[in-house]
Structure formats: C-alpha cells, structure tokens
Amino acid sequence: MFDGTGLLNVYADGDWSDRIALGDEVFLSGDMVNGYVGWELWYPSLEAIVSSGNPYEQPVHEYIFGVSFPRPFEISVITGTVHVIDSIVYLYSGQVRIAIIELSTYNDSYDALKAFDGQTVTIKAANYYFYSSCYGFLYQEGAAGITVVG
Image: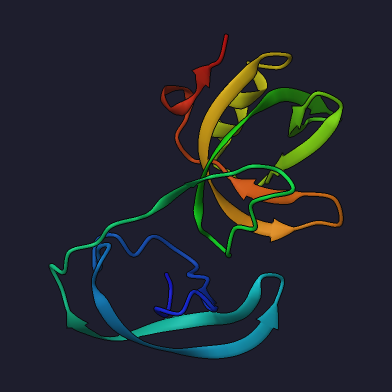
C-alpha cells in the first residue's frame, strides 16, 4: 500500500484482498515509525473504504545496477545470473552482485529462483530495501515469472 507520495509503506499482518483491491482509496490508522524503507505504518487498522473500483496502473521500470534508484516497493524488471550462496538468492552481472532476493519472498517463488542457479534470468520484483552494496527485492511470481536469457 502506498500513500500517493511513495514515502509511506504499510505493513499488514494478513491478507486484506477480500476487503480491498488495487486502486481503492482507504482510511487507515496505526503506529507511524521510521523503518527500514522510510516511513511505515505498523499494525494498521482499516477504518473505512473511501472509494473502490478506481483504475490502478502499476508502473514497471527496468533496473540497471548503478543507474536505477528504485523507490520502496517500486516494481522493476531485473536481469541477472542467479547465484545461491548459503541458501540466499542473489542476482549478479558478471562478478558484481546487483540484487538480493529477500527471504520474505513466498517460498514457491524463492524455490523457483533457486532452481535457476547459474542461469541468467529476467524477473519482475518489488524493491524492498537498500543494502550497502545493492537493493533487496521481493519476488512473488513463481516459476511462471522467470524468463531464461540466452
């Protein structure tokens, strides 16, 4: 969920998809904290649905290491070689680590990426966090969202 500025992130403790949909305007309450990826609303409560059925378009950007600076939860297309190191999935360009795939990615999607160890792939993922050397992304599209390059 976003606040329109892209500066507020909301962490819900469950699936709200039975109550709200992409594009809905909602009124939430919760605890504001300055977290990992900027301002975060923790322990949110859905107070009201202001409007629903609104059009929604999720822009997708190409991620180019060292050139792109994705905002929190912005969707990027990433191409890199999968390397699994100590059960953690990384994407590399040559010898350069360009992305970490977060462990909070759904297990089936995480396991699907692990199966491509050593192969160059293209995926769509959401920016989650900036580490000292590269961005961490959430990947949720399973095996169907992985395209092998070359």
